[in-house]
Image (tube, rainbow, N blue to C red):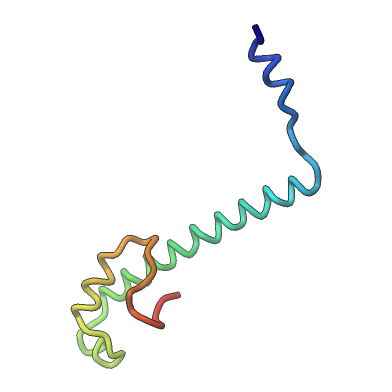
Length: 84
């Protein structure tokens, strides 16, 4: 019967330069994803605060704003060509 100590010793920690580079790239990709989600959330908040006149100038209807601002932050815009 193996103990936890034996099990942990049998699984070597990979600290090769390639493994570290992959881990770093994964962390950076995750941070970029989170930053994009935050940016999308803030854009939708600002969109909801615009006046009807400003929306009309941009060619966006109030119905489109209503739909867009209710989308989860992880979903891309339904407004074609207007997402980040």
